[in-house]
Length: 234
Image (cartoon, rainbow, N blue to C red; front, side, top):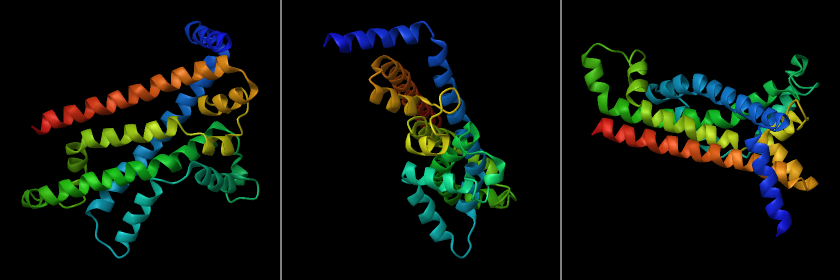
C-alpha cells in the first residue's frame, strides 16, 4: 500500500513540477491528436455533407461502410497504415513510418469515419427538413451545404469531440505505426503501457492523470455544446 501511495505522490510531483520528459510526451500526444482531428474534420465535414444530399448508385453501401468503420479496431487501422507506409508499401518512399506524421495518418483513419458518419446523419436530417425551403430560395443542393453545416454546428462539434476522445485514448494504431520511440513517437497511451510493464508507476500514473483530465474535459465540452444546441433550437 505504501508503494502505491508513494507512486501517486511521485506522479503528482511530475505533473506539478512540469518534468521536461513528461511534458514532451504530453505535448506530442496533443499535437498528434489535434492534427488528426483537424485533418478528419477538413475531410469528413464536406464529404459527409455531400454524402447526405447526393443520390447515386452505391450510396447506401458507402453509408453502411462508413458506419461500420466507426468501430474499426485500432490495431487493424494501424496495420493497414503500417503496410502503406512500410518500405515495400506504396507510400514507403515518403519515409513516414515511425514518425509523428505517420501516427497522425493512423489516427485520422480512426477519427474520419466518426466525423463523416455523424456529419452525414446530421446534414441528411436537416436537408430533409429544409430542402423545400432552401430550394424555394433558389439554393441548389451543393450551395446549401455551408448553410446546413452551420445550422448543425453544435451536433457536428459534439461529433468532432467524440473523435478527439477516441484518438486521445488510442494505443494500438500509434504503437504499430509510431514504434513508441522515446523522444520521437512516444505518446501518453503508449508510455503508460510501457512504463506500467517496467514498474515505473509514477510516470504511468502521472500520464494517466493527465489523460483522465483530458477525457473529462472533452466530455464536459461535448455536454456543454449539446446544451447550447438545445437552447439555440428552443
